[in-house]
Image (cartoon, rainbow over all chains, first blue to last red; front, side, top):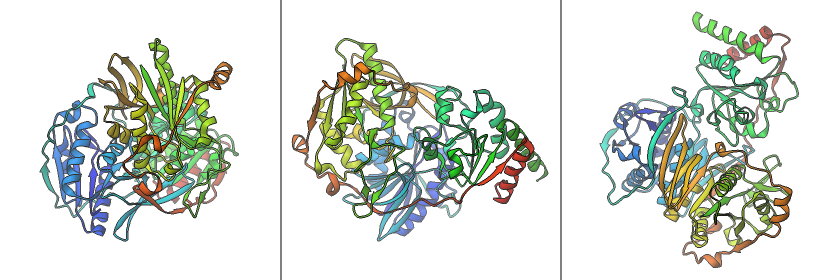
Length: 327
Length: 263
């Protein structure tokens, strides 16, 4: 395992921050292994993403705008990624730990008969082999693993776990040929947008989450959203709020939802069941606002404010907005 | 239509867990196992589909687990699945994503299916890699993150696939593998009748000898190796501030954000 390949997730030319985190980390690992750092960008808008990626320290950016990538589910993506991996030779494939990244990861791992490590938050090279570590068992344990019996490794990486460092870019952009003899079965007939313009929850630097204590759907937009906007973040929710139908499940943070690791996490009216803890406990700073001083979330927060969130949050939003105008 | 649901038996979320430093594996002794929460949604989706299609549609639960997991499998039968198949063999111990997927795929080829439904993730390993790897090793089309099955039957499936910003309508042929999200609906509780009925349902067992694998699985065949385990970074005890009014609470948070250079 000598080279590193980054799978780039994007939508019509708009990529995620995690892409740059992976590109920066790929360089470090490739250097430690004495290999090259590659990236694959496929689908409509790929050339745009490749241009932006050139600011990062990769060796080769493989690009295709093959229309099949957006017409058929996953299969073309996996084929292109396999083609890059085969041409690069023994390598570690990095994917974001997102819905799409996970979908592709299991498939490419099987294609390459690769070992797979998931939800990785640390990578190092030890004895010439990549070692990756991440939280397991609901975050109670950090497990470090390496690869054996294989020439390829696959790792899904938690967004916000690594720094994106631009610079040093002299990457060559090359177009990749369509793998021959492939047929695709799952057809994407239609695409429906429900929540437009929302920043990816997994990679938002700040997440403001609401739970049962919000009492209904409205406070998510009237209370949490303005604070999230003021802090440059995104709105999330607990399972209780999603189950109650106050927000779509795509906003749910926790064991059965999204796992986030922002610099700042503010939990409003969330008690902090283990279900929720699993999804946010690696956040940099955790602040909880709750009426009850004995809530479990107090055990894994940095600051617990015991009070009425309906009074506190608007005041806080004003203060943050004020600080920004005076900055 | 034959529906098969894959289920993983995982330690109860709320149970305290310990990894044996010698084997670097989870100590399962004394831990109550439950059906992986994500897989309960897969069972729910299968049962909904069975109710909709009626006729000779059956739901089989498939798990790779030690035989001691039989009682947990019965909970899936109590929810309404028709029967179960367990792949149990000491030689499977220590299997990673690769070995698990490879062995399961060979077993699932033997059970056969029109529609294979998987949960998206397991709450202990957290990888989400198995369904994708199964798709490859089974050589069937894969449709992930399904939130609603619009049509299934007569060799075709059409479903809504959840994305970060909405959904896609995706269709393709059967047999196929799908993964489902929580949006398919809250998993049903087993009724008393279901629990009584589950006792009479068949749980068939397969072993490695039945599969005749040409590649090593278990610890020997695994393509990953655990090097070390450690405790996550501990957080200092929370500062607690009583806020009798909004301004006090807001100021406490604002000062804390300043202190940590977050604003």
